[in-house]
Image 1 (tube, helix red, strand yellow):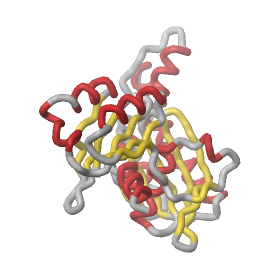
Image 2 (cartoon, helix red, strand yellow):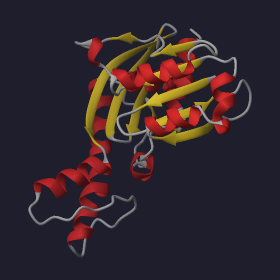
Image 3 (cartoon, rainbow, N blue to C red):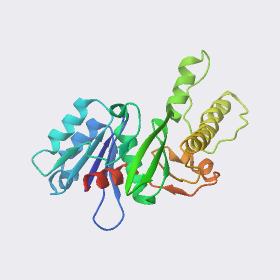
Image 4 (cartoon, one colour):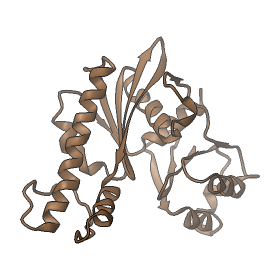
Length: 247
């Protein structure tokens, strides 16, 4: 099964084989992805008789372009069913990336889970397991590391643009170090506080934390300090898409 994740800044292709480990076959901008699908290097992806599942949180035109590129060579499903009960005020506003990650977390736990993603944004969501079904309760959305660094640069008259990196010292010895600390250490603290607060308010203090995302290195140590079981899965969205599509 091939799973495409069209995010705000990147397009990803993950292959979930029937046996063995998942593989990330491609990660680039959508324009590059569409170009690569027409070349010999990814011809097998476009032609293989397997379902192609697409999760999109970006412009509808981008999803339609990818759907059209894959049409005629097998089944294609844009934002397939996730199978979750949405216990939120505006279900139609919840991003499919959050929902598929939540469904993927349940494939690991089959129990209550706090789902953390870190990429363009930091999302922390609660999903409750009840009577063989997941209930998505909502959560929080905060800026990711690149957004934080960009906002500081744009909003501060003399603040430089830094490239965020995990594992920096909290005590910055110059402006760049202070910015790096504010982004990386501050982000880790925000994630911990959100996980604790959401778990408490959802009455899920013992829930497993499942985390993913291209920038998850910023959170690995911080989440490991919490008194909860921790699961890391870089293929979490694809796993949730496949589970939802398969019923």
